[in-house]
Structures are given as structure tokens and as C-alpha cells.
Length: 426
Image (cartoon, rainbow, N blue to C red; front, side):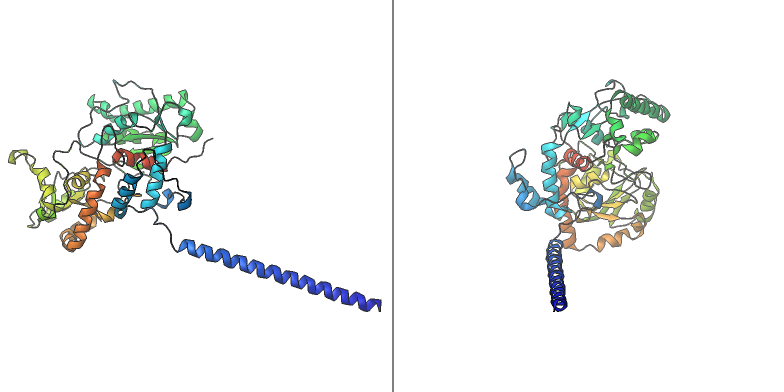
């Protein structure tokens, strides 16, 4: 009798255990189903990714967004986002991060260096390397500068080789001067050694400065390079370095745009044959009747500003790389409203992770030069109109100002640096 009761109790206990396990299994299945459904809903409406995945910042839920900006101009920001949404990879992400940058970003500028010799400000703000000079001036007059290094996200090494070039200094001596200057900062201040230079940056547009700094591997490999010749086949690292737009300022003529009826010429280029792609471009197309291709710069004796006026009458302006992958003609084309045709290999275009260049330019490889005319003629009228309209929208991003203006070239470069502020400190 007792054995029977014990067996019944064991059976009841076993059944209870089975029921408990079954209940847990059902609850686990329901939990997985719930999270799976939520995940699928989230992934069915993703934000458009930035072109470089390594720079994609975390998205912020709309109900947690602080909609106030540092300038109390919400309406201007909203209008700006609506106007420029076509040209961004992710307008919402850009808008949120730009406001965050304006409110918080701080840069410390090293005070050392003799401004009358090699350091601090370049010789002038004009010419095709004006971007370097404008940045040096803008950073000093901007809200981003801090005199307290403990508040700084990044550290600016204010060395310019532009003045060295004016004094006839050799490349070898330039490199020695750069190295001695940077090493003096490393020994005098503790900030470089905290990150091995990862939160330091320098700016150079002139190819003289590029060559001089490339002779100092510690600087080039560790710090952020902001350069006008961002060729990623010779050491430029897109997730670390920044492409500086090479802008010819002051512009000789006003900005073009919304003038489609005047643009009757298919394509235009005139310049020196100082690269292989330019030699091929001139040889293949200089006698063409639809492409206006000259293998030399236009003689000023023909008339005033003839070169610049050609931009106004042309649909597509050819921008082949010169001695470097970059070309000042890209910024010229954007300013004058002529859709730029990029003919360069390994060119990390300025603001490429923010702006969708395919929305306002034609981006080709050098081997496409042989099919250039057909490629341009295959562009439907509606496609050209869309490219032209978007081109007008990006003009402000390729314009330098003093003092700087929101969304201009200076702010775009600062935004690129803001995205690169996260480093490990030792």
C-alpha cells in the first residue's frame, strides 16, 4: 500500500516537472518570436547608410531627439534638410550629428611656432591652395577653438609648408623642420603620448606640404591628415584621414546655376598636360566638334575671363587628375554650375561619406576617357537637369568664408573631424 502511494507521488512529481518544462519552453518560444518580430520591423525601415560604414554614427530615436540648436534656428535647419536631402547619403543622421558638433566640438591649437617663419598661417588666402589658408584662419575665429586642452576632442598641429616654399627651402629640409617641430610638441606636452597622436591633425593642401610631411612617417601614420590630394593608393586612409576640397578663391565670376538654356556645349576642358590621363584626354578629343577640349590653358590675350566664362556655357566640365588625383576644376565646376566629370582613379572625393557625388556629378575611371563623349550623350535631359539642380544645392559646401558660415567648406571639414574624434587614450 505504501509502495503504491510512493509510486503515485513520483508520477505526480514527474508530470509536474514536465508541465513546468513545457511552460518554460512555450515562454521561451514566445519571447524569441516577439524579439524576432521587433527586429524585423526595425530592419524594414533602416536609415540610408553613409558611404563609409566605419563613420556611421549611432541613430537617435525621434522621441529622444533634442530639437533645439545652438543658434535657435530650427526653421532654417528644417528648410536646409528639406532642400539638401537629395544630395546626402543620410540627411537625418547628418542633421543630428551636425547640431551635436556645433554644440560640443572643441579643438586645441598648439601655440608654439614662429609665425614669421614656417608655422601658423600660410602666406595668403588666394590661389588654388586657398583652402589651407582659410582653414588656418577659420579655426581661430570659430566657436570650436578652446584654450583649455583638457576640454579638447582633437589637437591641431598648425604647421604650414607654404611659407617654406616661398623661402626656397628644399623638400629634405622641410621634412626636417616638420619633424623637429612635431617632436618638440611631443616632448613638451603630454597629449600626443596619450593617444600616440590619434587625436591630432594637420592640414595641408599644397603638394609641397604633402611631400614634406610624407617624409615623417610618425606624423603621417598616426595623426589625421587633412589633405587636398587624398589618393588611397599611396597611403591615404579614408577612415582616418580627411579629403580637403581644393578651392580656387576668390572666384573670378559669380556662382552659376539655374541657367540650363545657356548650356549648349556638351563638355569642356582646358589645361596643362601634366598627367597621363590629361595627355590621353587631349589626344583623343581635342579635335572633336561637341567636346571643347584644349591641350593648353586658354591664352588670356583672347579676352578677359574667357576660361571662366566657358563654364557658364557648358553642361559637363571634365576634371581629370593632374600631378595628383585632385583638381581645382572640380570646385570651379561646382561654383559655375557646370556638372563635374571626375576622371581619376583612387580619389577619395571630399565629403564622400556625407554627400552622394553621383547625385550632382559624373564619376568615372580613367579608362572611361575613350568612351567619354558617348557616356555624356547617353545622359537623358531629365538626368542632366537633376544633376544640375543638385549641383546648385552643394555649392555652399565648397565655399570658404571669413568668418565661416554654417554648412560651408570649413564646417564640412570640421564635421569630418568630429566623426573621427573617438580615440583610445592611454
